[in-house]
Length: 585
Image (cartoon, rainbow, N blue to C red):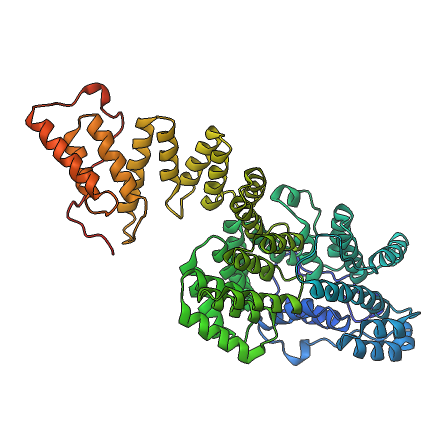
């Protein structure tokens, strides 16, 4: 075990955001709790409320500290004392979102804390004006039409401070945010990495860095500080990169070392299961989370997505009413209500609530994507495309938006466009059969049949959630007059249906039995042909063909026809098990 190192002693000034020396492991949870309480206070003083809340929630999940171990706040320096009046007034204005006013009274302050709040107020003022302009137009705007006019000035000023090594951990964080907003991604990554070294406890810097990492290879080349905070970051980035097994392992490790009561970790595990479409597990965890933290609103929009997929109307209605009572003006609440109306097929009302969510926060990813879905339902493809594009602008890793764009261009019969977007969705979700099936259909329309075959087979290999890949592959073989391969695909399809044990209606089942009946008939395999023809009689669309085939088989049998060996399949023949089974209605 590495020896635990303590946080900066009281002698460290509050003027300079402290370089917190923190543990490389979880050997001393009391020390970790002290560190979390300290950073919660430092971030709160600077208006970084989400980071402060994250730290406070994590600290709450650890055992309480005795009075003797509680640390006093860092002492006030001469610079802090000189700026105290201006900082106190400006912070009051900042808290009520009067950012320009706060910046005005902080101009000329020298302390690190006041300087950060001055620059941060200017940044947020520009973001607020940009958001207001975006909301006024709603339709989404093409990227670059609305800009934060303060960014370039902030970059120049922060760059000078950075070169002079005058930025503390919080200043580096803000500089990284400005660079990211200006699409200077490489520079932003370097600055965020530096910020995590200078101030490892600031969750906001880790989170911003997470948003810029596109794949696991990129992650390997980052020189990150060896601290316990890195474990939370890795768990989060693995979830974002759809590396769910690795993410779940990380979260389980964090639970094992002492964070079992953390609602943040529980919610992240639920989101991870949602991402791999393990709906039952995700629902179970979300229900437990609701009991543990009944007034929680974060991630409840994800919970509502699961309820929507399962068509759980009453549960979704209860969730929507409950969140309305807690806070009707939260973006998550609006998204939950939107999902409720969507489930009731009231798509215009659903779109209205997603728009409300975007007025509250124009950068809220889920609302843009869900609004795109609603516009698709209303056949408003132009608005759907704009909504999905805006979602991608917010987060390029949102596979749902890429997939939605592919579907929209498919409706517009523009296969080259939809191929591009489906490819992007597939890159983000390489083991999602829906993306592969969509890609296969696209290749098929472009007459790239070899590529289409590969996609359908891969979709089947990774676990075809919609049970359609084999049917599409079979039809492709049919089209190419590859009868033996088509038959094999239909055999696998039927076997999969009857082996999964689900009593569900499969629309293509009759198609499979019809083809197999005809195939076996051509091969003069009367028993198999007869069995499949009898199955055809159970479906309205193939009943008459099945009866006609049975009559032909009977007639040929009476004439003494026998099978010919050259047509026998080289694979195990399909035999229908449980011939007297009952089909679900």
